[in-house]
Amino acid sequence: MSEASSSPAGADGDTPFELQYFLPDPDLAEMVSSFYFVRIDMPLFDESERADRPQFRIMSHAEGEYIFPDGHCFPAKRATIIGPTSGSVRARGNGPLRIYGFGMMPAGWATLMGEHADKLTDRAMDAADLFGDWIDEVIEALVNAEDTAARLVIGNNFVREILKKNEAAPVWFTRTVDQWLTESPSPQVHDLVEATGMSIRSVERMTKHYYGLSPRMLARKYRAVRAASALARGQTLDDVQLGDAFYDQSHLIREMKRFAGATPGQLARPSQYTEATTRGRQQLAGKVSPLVSDT
Image (cartoon, rainbow, N blue to C red; front, side):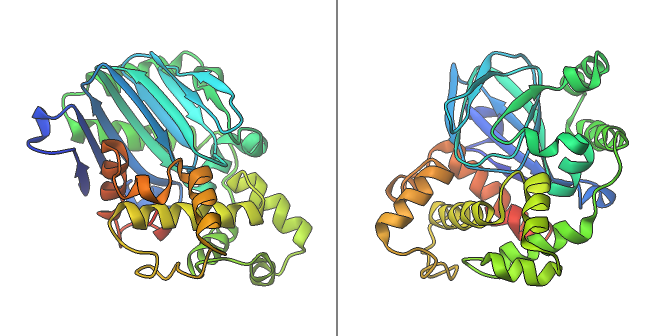
């Protein structure tokens, strides 16, 4: 069981916040970015989450909300499916709280949602609306599992079950897009079109379906969150070869504020949540896609 654990300071059980990341089973690596378990022992959790991949989250109790870039507010459910996001999302929850979740890679997202994959960008839904009362059994199993190892078994088996719902997505396309997003600090759309051998219209249609965004917006999103993660880790943009990815400092600040929910100055003094998220993902480097570990 590969684990990356982050907490603000001190011994795990004595801190008000703890976040752990875990690798999915090998057969799910194209579908799931990572599993994560969160312990919140504070009266209120209120953080800006960076623009991210779709998420599936199960909570010990549903007392919170997600506020999306356009101001849309969705009350958290005990099992919530959050679509891909085009900007930072404000997440609020009343503690003490336990969250058991996983991020979905584009192929997993499209396989789960089928023809509706591109309709949930910057939106969320109650998982019970998709799976019915069966999801209640999964929630209780996760919340009452005796330990982390048992929860990971439940989580991996749950993903296998829900991905039977629709036809599997073509991973050749998502692999091509992921490579395009990681091989340059500022990806250019014409390079993606050339790599796929498809028309620009077809590429735009497929990236919106699998990633929830147009190629241009997708490139902006990952350029900004990669830079934000580097700064939160104490690196400079030159350290990760992003120094020329932005026109000037104003451009950098605007893009980070939109996609990461923080300015470079704020990222130099990251919150407990940002610090834990950044450190945990970084510890998965070499074991998951760079789109996961570097953002």
